[in-house]
Length: 329
Image 1 (tube, rainbow, N blue to C red):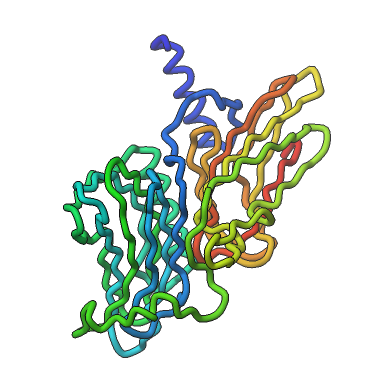
Image 2: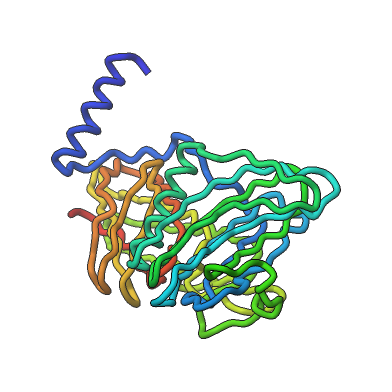
């Protein structure tokens, strides 16, 4: 790009940000993306933890990329609690992996903590911020260690890209003065209520949508096609931790540029979201049910033009949510 062209583009983006002007559609530039995960590990049951116990035990087997979503509260009112994530190399050769982590908390507000975790995950992905780790054969290494004060919540979304080795991943909770010797093996399988947990295959969903500019269109995100655990049979309602790629084909049947407004609206209860729209991160803070927040406004030229959207349903938010594609303002 020539210097004058760069200056013109920069000036246009600055003016759009300052005055709320619509941006032109630009879905062509490549962006860093999450690796194609083979498995999703979900640790959210029990969400409210009251004692020393195991929370998740999962094996990567032959997977080369896995994703871990964890979300837990220290439900004790009289004691701090440690939440830890560990990885063990089950192979006879050292394990080499790249860890991309978005962590939220510890803090008392569950939705804000879950939202912060997904925001930091996407910021890490887009900036290429990954930590290289090596684990010796048949040894353990800590990935996350956090102390929660009473009623604090921790949430995280981690991506593990595995170059060599086979891993076991565990999530553990400790009260002060306890150790792994105090963790009953049965606690890894004891669940309370309906919060999600388990191992889920192929945690990636791509959807195609046509949005005509002569009529409004809506999409219920994470409202169907729920993943289910192949071994335990549990359904991941809300598809929390699943990466969605929405390929939206905008159709402008007129002979002039038209404005398209994209909106975010919680459907079942309070929700927040992080969306990557044509390479730009859009932060939708926690909203009440039926509230509406604008994701962006775009000038769509005549013909067919793409909008490219990436997102992940986040912990403590009520998914599904509604995405609305509205002609004009």
